[in-house]
Length: 242
Image (cartoon, rainbow, N blue to C red):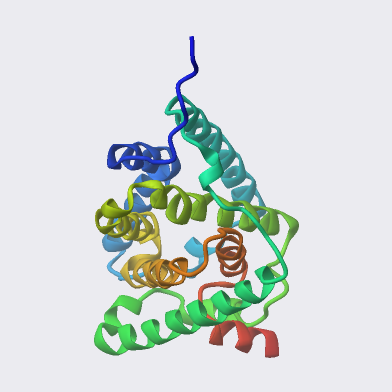
């Protein structure tokens, strides 16, 4: 009996199933958090809601590892050919990471500036001064659990968004890519609409660069950088100088 050949392609139904595996819990929790924001009378969460303890990071690591195992099992049963996912690294990898950090960070900064002009009430959140004060130094919040989670999360999210989403037939990307942006937005709504939209800008920039950069590693590492220091370049430079 001959073994069924592996497939390099996924269909849209696969993406929906994988989305539920990867982000179903996170999306439900995020939407619940956004409902809480609306109930508070503000448009964005308290700064404390965006700050994660070492315990939170450990819990997230466990959840993502379990989800990765479930996704692997599903893809294994689908006879998916994992070789279509490019995890190669070479001497161009780090320069590409830096390029992605600079371009994505600046795009996020510009977007937030324009969003703040057009819809300033989306940045209406409690304890503004406390948030500013806690953000004033780059080093105290760094920890090994945060580093471990950031590295895993960069791999985890971009494996789906820039790896598995791109495994659909090329003609179906016109549907798959908007779907991926909607998913990015949905499970970041706990940050408020402005925060979720800014994360979606990262998704748009990544899609533009994905046309030229085939390996996933630079995207994953740049994502990990933003997980550790926040999405934006100017704020990182400001924190570093202080």
